[in-house]
Length: 376
Image (cartoon, rainbow, N blue to C red; front, side):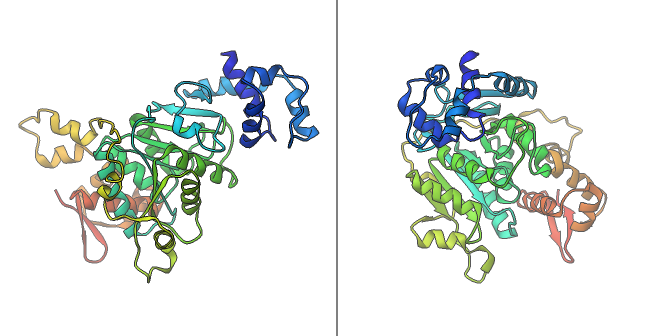
């Protein structure tokens, strides 16, 4: 436990960045040696930095550890055998990971980051759902930033087929951001994990997200961008991927979609044009794939259906969360999206994403006049 406290002492010091810790580890053999050193003489460290390192008070570290335990999470430190080697070998890795859920042993498994714009279109959501579903169904671990839009679709599609997802967030694990992803976050934890380098209580400041993006790239063998404008966080993640010698994949977009030309720019710069999951998996012929867990839908199919149950009911029983709420509403009558949004009191973007997924599963169908009807 003291070993973890020393890491927390070092990583929670404001002003001692990951790059500074990399420099320290070049001079000292362990975090214990850093902690017990009194006189520091390292290029690039100001007197302010040195004074921070001379302060050996562990009270903040103990506080952070206590809060971590209280929210049901745990810590993986840089020299822990559970720490992923693929991330450790990046130029500026996070030295402490806070984890909710089961962190998979990804060292020998295929991990693909899936990222894109928060302001996604129907096209972006459809292709993301399709490719993510196929990747997860074939045993690929998907990684995202659990943001609204494309990231949320990728995570949702993965857990929906019983796949393993790793969500990397830019805040403490006691905060769900964006709030609309609260239910999705619970599902991700059941099928994988959510991780952060930020200790509990840290809010999602804008400066945190580029740091989060480097971890997504660092955990992934390749990064897929399904939809993005030419200036976006998704392209920052792709740049980190290139810097880390990772593969970059991109879904093409028609040239008239002016807002979403980021993926075309990536393809023009050398990213692999991607139309399906096999375009990605074929690049890793020797990669190991993780056996998928039974999804709620699979589990329902493996149960003996009571003779009084109908096929209609079993399909609805396989749904969870907002998808089930939408289906139950449409049982009563056909509805437009604004009516569904009003009844469920959820953001229209989230409802729209769920409607697209339900339509692709054949649960609902879209009628003239933008109405939706239960299709089972």
